[in-house]
Length: 93
Image 1 (cartoon, rainbow, N blue to C red):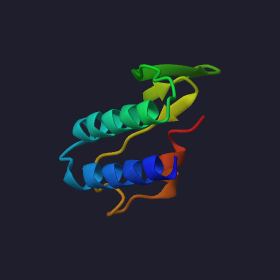
Image 2 (image 1 turned 120 degrees about the horizontal axis):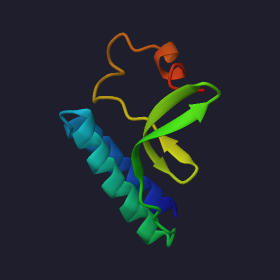
Image 3 (image 1 turned 90 degrees about the horizontal axis):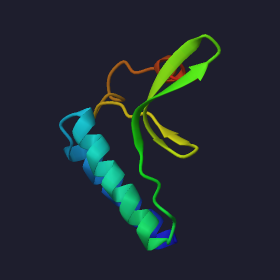
Image 4 (image 1 turned 120 degrees about the vertical axis):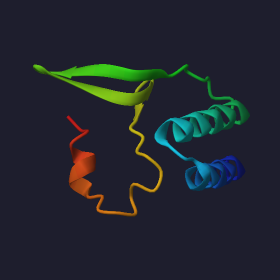
């Protein structure tokens, strides 16, 4: 499991460095996640893109949902500039 996690981390780092936009990054990371799940014999749950989730009267959209795991992608290098934690909190319920 440790080797798979290390390989996944290396792949994610490489994809993050080389992706030109959020869509390309999402594609690369989803492929790496699927591969890691296969190695670990974890059933791969096909993802649901741009899924809407209701919270009271509000509806939020998440980039990808894998069962109970929600992934919110940001464009490559978006953490280098004026990114703040408050931006990330806006995506939470």
